[in-house]
Length: 420
Image (cartoon, rainbow, N blue to C red; front, side):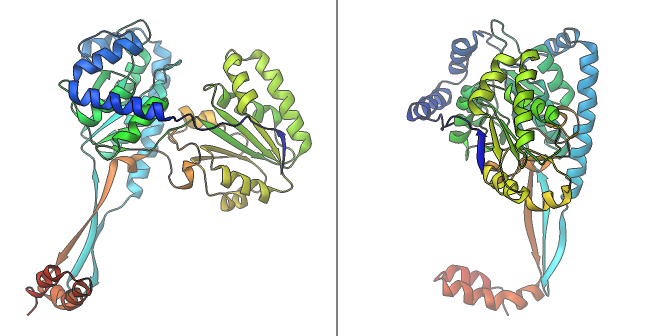
């Protein structure tokens, strides 16, 4: 393995001061409720609105301020996201009355959580597509109360109109003009205006991520998000223009985003470097994309595709693109990724917006142990058992002996009293 381009060390930006600051902020929200939320809204966003819930009039007004064609495009994306979410839901099946011993019937039910909050970042761009990606699977799963929050646009007291429209299209029932770690604390513990939820999902900056980490347990979360990343595996004959475009698309997210090419071809690697430079000149976001690529981008030359697969599995990237001839073999060798894009035409951008898969995915090697957000994020698989008198007779004596073996005489008695 040889690095033709290597990133600077991207060390964890988590610090003791960050952990302490967020701990104090959560404590403040728990103790002071809406007063704390208002104070933080003013401090971070210049937003002094005292009613956090967005009104129906604001949502209606937002539609008039968003390009009609863009609204139709969002609706088209929403249809595809909902189609795939429904198919995923139907693949998660209940188990009814499976008999393990005579008279012992087991099963499980698929139950949605009662409520959730979809955290939609504001940041430098209004990431309205995230509203669709979070709320549509929640709605499809059967969550009854779907809340969402997003920070106010800088210098205003309102969420970006396009984000409000996306939230409404996605089926959000409550929208709050709140962002940051204090918003996470509010939905975890509740305030006068904000009723707590069962699950908080969605990406955010390091403050939001740390708040989710500290509130986990009080509330469920999807996972802890870090900087976004794409890894592309390509062999000789890969399309350098496509690859460069995908690396830059990833790099423009922010200064910490990471694009990686792993290839068996020195010529392709060199061609991609040239293409990146050429395309950057025409890119409107070249200031961010260029710096991100300069600091975080990597091009790795390997001796074989099998070595490329090993490198990828070790990186465990958020997005993984494979531009190879034997796609089936590649798929059999790859097992750590948030979402897989197969073939040179399956650009990450399609998954980000319109194809139907979810773009809320695990980062910084979390795909070693979890997949991305989907309907199952909002579903609980809850077991049950039904035991007849015949069932007691078939397993009761074994239960007594197992309980006694652990010294739990009350457990043993609870089984014994049911035996003849």
